[in-house]
Image (cartoon, rainbow, N blue to C red; front, side, top):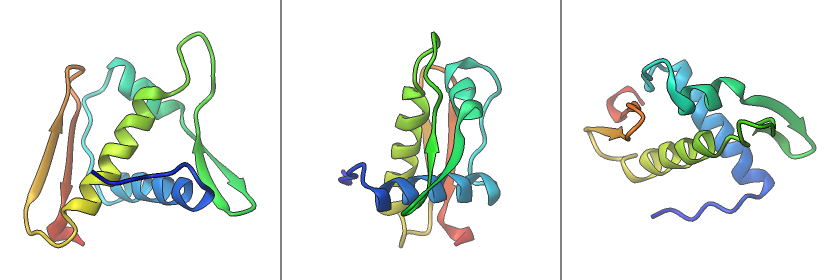
Length: 104
């Protein structure tokens, strides 16, 4: 388990880790479902301390699944940083994410 306080530095780390995962093609998602919708709705906003992800609040919620996914992905990166293997995460909404530490 990795502690992640929602401070400016942690919020920027969460955002940069998620962006890096998508940019390096370490994340592969099935289209559709509420997680996919939550992730597509995320916005990058600039703050004094740097940048962070923001999820709009509406009748569909406030990005809880996107936040949970980001925290899980951050935890995977932290826990497998020095390992030479792939971690696979799955959930009931057919999420499929891979963090491949050999590409770092």
